[in-house]
Amino acid sequence: MVKKIFGQCYIWLILILMYLPVLVLIAFSFTDSDRVGQWNGFSFDLYPRLFQDEAIMTALGNTVLIAIISSVLATLIGTLGAVGAFYSKKKMRNTIDVATQIPVVNAEIVVAFSLTVMFVFLGNLLNAYLFSFWTLLIGHMCLSVPFVYISVKPKLQQMDPSLYEAALDLGCSPSQALGKVVVPEIMPGIFSGFLLAVTLSLDDFIVTAFTRGSGLLSGEKKIETLSTYIQAKIKRTAVPPEMRALTTLLFILVVVGVVGVSIYRNYKANKIAARVRRG
Image (cartoon, rainbow, N blue to C red):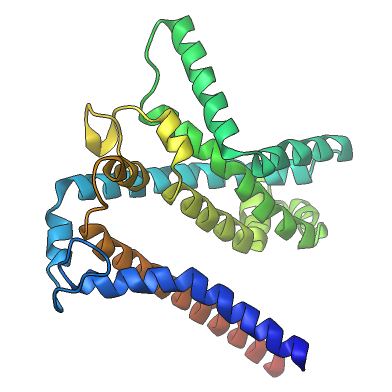
């Protein structure tokens, strides 16, 4: 009984420490004060000001574009890598597994610095300045691909290996068997890997700061994402109050997404259970 109470108290303490700062930001997004803790009366002024702030909108647009593009490519590469490793010989599969785990446990600053050294080295060889949207995209993909790989791999291990062979025996080409049999079986892992890649890209700062150049919505200026924009603001002044409104909108979007996915999964589970009962 004591252990149960202690465990519940511990869980609630962790949840409070995680969500209380977010709830404070949400509460103060409904007042137009410049500082958190100063209440100037209930107001929605920060929300129209948020969409009128060109710098924040540019940073937000860059962040979303980079997250989507890098996550789609990382999901494609990570999924193909996991499938290829799964159907490779044991020695090759173990080698790929170890090589993929190293970036996951490695410090992000090491990844960012090594990419910077590589881009500088290649730039000196080609006598060109390489830092641009493409270097930033490569950096985010290097960060995300290993996490997609480890999300897809367990689903491949849970899959019946005879399904792929049966599809080949029934006349499918290897690409058709992959698309019609393997991919649907591992789709939950692919979707989880994609969401993880999006999350990693959205809140990344170190790799972005080391590998960014000009491009995207920033034009000829250095690409600003939300993380680099906030860091630049903190060095000079306080965080813009409009960011509290953006935090609230992002939090609501995430909550709606999580609830929607949960409802969809419960619906599918109930539908499958109903079919089993009827069968």
